[in-house]
Amino acid sequence: MAIIHDDAGRRRFLSQAVMGFGLLFGLGTLGLRFVQFLVPSQKPRQSEAVLIGAESRIQPGEALSMDFGGHKILVLQTDQGVAAFSRRCTDLGCLVSWNRERQQFLCPCHRGVYDKNGTNIAGPPPRPLDRFEVIRRGEQLYVNIQST
Ligand code: FES
Image (cartoon, rainbow, N blue to C red):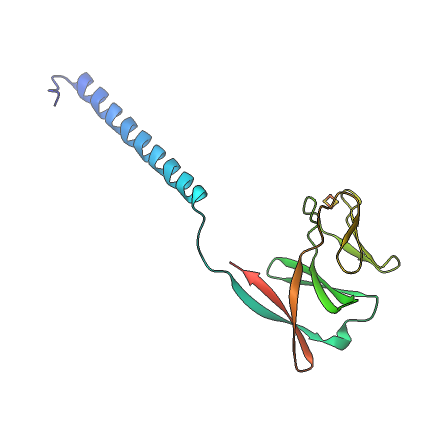
């Protein structure tokens, strides 16, 4: 351990000690964040059934727009029955909208087109729209939302 003989030496020592502590603290925080980045949280996904309403709410050829806790969804009748699609385009994530005349989902960003079953049919989208499970309980329909 160094013996400090004067005020200037003591100040320099304290200054370096504080800077060293700050540097260690900064590197420790950075290292912790890096480890968190490499090992993502293992929280189980929870699903939640959210009420859409009676099937009669969904008119043929129309899409019902809903927003459940950040999930923007379009619900409509498809060839396989009622389906709920994410409005997030599978290209770069812009919000698609339903075009009643064309019976297609259209993305305004790069002219992506999906058919009424959510299948990508034109433009850059690489895959179909994400779908949410639709559950029937009696007369009511629910959409199964996954959250973390
Ligand atoms: S973001 Fe939808 S087509 Fe590019």
